[in-house]
Each structure stands twice: as C-alpha cells, then as structure tokens.
Length: 515
Image (tube, rainbow, N blue to C red; front, side, top):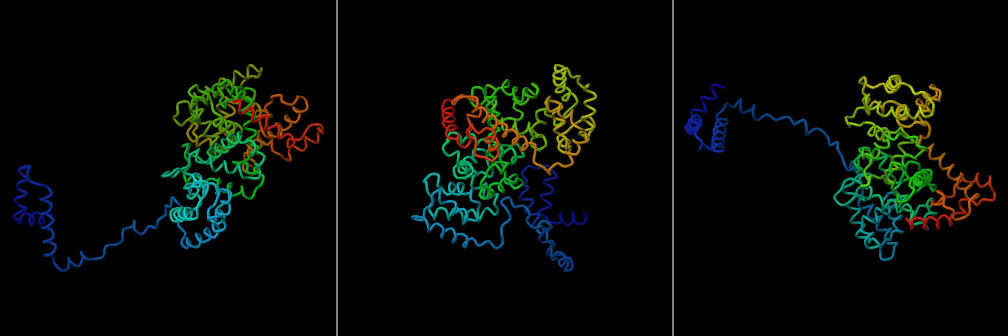
C-alpha cells in the first residue's frame, strides 16, 4: 500500500491536486480528480508485468444470481408449446357460423368452449371484447383481445382476473363480479324459476358475492388477488356450474338454498325491510343468544366495511355475520371473532378481554337460575383447551391450531351454544375434533336444517292463513326441491311450493317495489 501511494505522488498533476486537497481548497472538482486518477491507473495497468496481465485477463466466474432460473410467474408459467395460431383458427371457425361473423351473448357459450374456457366465462369474454357496449362482438375484435390475452396471461386464474378486473387493475373487487353473476342467474337451468323475478336477482347476487369474498379474500383487503384466487376452489366451482344442473349442490358459493336461509334470517330481523338493521334488531337473532357486548363490537366497524352513518348494518355484512356465527371452525370465522374480542387491537386476547366478555355470560346464567363457573376456573379450562404458546396470552395462531375454537368463542358470547357444549359428553367433543374434515361443515348442516324448517313453516302457514297474509316465507321464491315433497305428502290439501311459485313472484315484486 505504501508503494502504491509513492507511485501516485510521482505523477505531477496528481501531486498538485493532492496538495490542493490537503490545504482544503474548495475549487478542486472531485470529478476532475477522479478522471486523472483513472487515467493514471490505466497507464499503470499497461506497465505491469506480463504475468500480472495474464491474471487480470482470467475469465470471471458467472454471478450466482444469473444461474438461478426464473421462479416467479404472477400471471402463470408460460406454456412451451402453445399454438396460438391454431387456437385463433378454431375461434374464427366458430365466428364464421354467426351472421356477419358477429356473436351475441347467447352465442358466447360456443365461443367460450372454442377458447377452451368453462361455459360460464362467456359473459366476461363478451364484456371484455366490448360486447356490453355494442350488444355484439365481431370476430376481429374478439381475436385481437384473445390473442393479447394468450400472450400475457398464461393460466386460468390470470385470464379470469384480467377479464373481470377494471382496466389497469390486477385484482377483483365486489362490483367486478356482478355482470358474471347476473349471467349465471339469467342462463343457469337451476335458477330458471328466478327469471320472472328480476327485482330479486340483486339479493342472490349480493349473497354469492359476499360468500366469494368470505372464502377467497383471506387478506380481508376487499380485493381478490391472483394468488388468493389460485389458493381457493372458486374457479373449480365455476367449471362445475356447467355440469351441475342443481345449484344447491354447489354449497360453497352458489347454493340457492343457502341464500334462502340467509335472507329469511335477515328478513325476520329487518322489520322495516330497508335492508339495514341496527343493534336492537341483531340482538333478537336466535332469541338474544349473542351478548350485547359482542353486538356492540360487531357494530364498531372492526369486521364491517359498509356501516351507514346512522350505525346500521347492511345485508352484505349480515351474510358474513351469520356464516361466522354458525361455523366457528373456518379460518375466516376464527379471524372474524378474534377481531371482535381483541378490544385493543394488539393481536392478543388478554385475560382482561376474556373477563370483559365473560361477565355478561355470568349475568345471563344467573337470570336463568344457573350458577356460573367462576372466571378463574373458566379461564383455566379455556387455557387447557387452546394451549397457547405464550402463557396467559391467546393469539390468532393459537386458535387456528386449536380444533375446538368454536367452544372457546361460544363460552364468551353465545349463551345458548355454551350451554349446549356444557351438556355434551366431553369425549364426543374430542371425537368430533378428530374427525374434522370428514363430514360436511357446520354451516352446511345449519343451512340444510333451517331450509327444511322454513319449507315446513311455509307449507303449514298456507294451511292456516289466507292468501295474501304477510309472513316471512311469502317474500321469497322456494325452488322445486325433493326436500319439500315429504311436506306436501303429509298435508295433501296444501299446494306444493312449485304450484305456489307464481303467487310468490307477485307478492315478491309488490314487496320489493314498496320498499
């Protein structure tokens, strides 16, 4: 190093610059100094020994980063042998069958199959090619759109998001699903009975859209990303719509029976039928089983997006509430109730927060002449149940790993279910936890039971009340279903739900128009 400094100082120009820098002169430009330093180094390299020169010309090993193959494909992994021209030729052949080579929305089913897409992609394909503005799609517009799609989107998820999303967006919001779901309502055989009830379509579409975000949008952002869609079974359910004539078999998203149960439950609480409920309305759910403190937390905005200025809850938020209330074993429902119980938002349920909710449970038990378990004893039971990683602090991760989260939650804010759990054999509870995933979900059980009850009430109400009497079931359309046959056989004088269908529609339209 000492020798290098001496050689630098032998250069007269550099020696002068160094002297000026040592005096602290401000007029020496660093850029000029660097230029001269580089020039001096270049001369020095030429004057080095041949042996050193050979070493400097040795091949530099390839950087490690260059040898790592590409592994991130946000729009899917490109296919090596994709014949785009062959696919376009198939599409052009289909369009040649239509007048003036223009396809309407009714023709888009054939086009979707030519694109090797599920049948119910037809509306997104139609709208993406501009058909929603003109009423038809020309072959040239569609081919240009689809060719670009094949070049930029390499899997079904990225294609579906691109078709539905707004321009420039790589995510889906709730309103993006409306045209797609409206086409399902208009064209699916299992929903044919809703064709005459156009005013009722929005209720079903809202329910399905909320269920999509409930199951798919795991980030709670209100925006479904490609990554979230890939991890879900939504596109598989869309493909099954083509094969399954009965939408009630698609229980995860599209079931009409599930919608019927949710809307009936909401209708009973929504006394003025403006599709909004307040805290007093929600408190009446399930005979006031849910504590007032928990209802206050639900209305605080911790799990809602659409609270009105007057603090009332929308029908869309009620969908989330009811599914979470009836099935507390899913990840979304565990997160839903954790957010409600985490009063200070620190990501931990402290002993204070647990005691805060348990106090009201004790009061309810005392009014029922039942001696409540002291909080200290209850706390020991819950800690043994959850087995938190950090003693005295229950986290969201602890509850997700615990297979008995529903018992934990019901203990603190649902008095009816808490008493049901207390009366059960503890060994049966353990067996249920061990066989989790082998049976239908708690939500599916609840929806099936409630649907049968509602249909039974519908039949008996027709027996004892005259036509036109306003009762909850009258506001809805009960689809023909095998479950209802047993009730029709039990009471031959009462008409079947199918025969009552026109009356339902008239009453339905009148009610929706009034409100």
